[in-house]
Length: 333
Image (cartoon, rainbow, N blue to C red; front, side):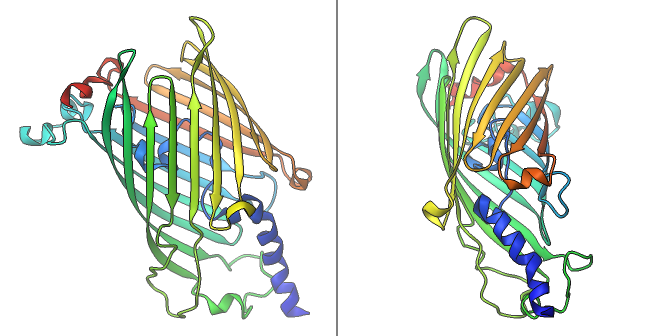
């Protein structure tokens, strides 16, 4: 009986988190604002130098519910980049040999999921290929590769577990370090974009500080994203988009976010999303000068709604660089 009680919380958590592909990676409702977090090829896509803070509290009011905090940076190595103007690097470094084709990015994150915690960083490199222009704007084909390193730890210090001496838990190290790689590809025009990404290419097969030699696996995750901008009039634009997520569990774990956002002069936006089998999401945002602010609230559709106050996500982005310089790099091709 004692052994069964110690496994009960784990069984409940496993059942809950299986709804979202075992929740082995963070979930974001505002993926449109910072697609770089799920696809490394988006690094430097718009030519700005961008710093973004994201915080997400899932199922607020439910003890040990998932929470994610991330701070990211991304830029495009342009000949006339903001970084080149704002720093005193040597001239030969101001003019990168790739002539605006290279994007760089990185972020640090901390993701809590019940008794599990992942804390680490990701560094991304993207390569952009010009595919001509549409209406004076570039068509951009990009590929990205990212190195991610994180600590996977199990929290046994509080009262979530009935028995911290559970033999199942003690077969694993309480803390290990896992390096892995993510890959992404995308195609972007002035009117639409599409992207594909995959995470955990090594499936967590490299472990440091592993003393038990216990077989364990990390799921590989796959993402498809796409959206199109439809002008309504001179002031309003409609942007329907989709975010499809899956994992090595294939069709058992497919989940879609179907989203429609309306922009007013690109300075204000509002939208609704439907996440299959999970939630309805309302989002609003605004742009003021170089600051971009977004807020999303998930209204849960599952039985968890009776025990929580929904999920809340805040995003703040600061973009450096003049809008006119975003596309100067096309002259370098």
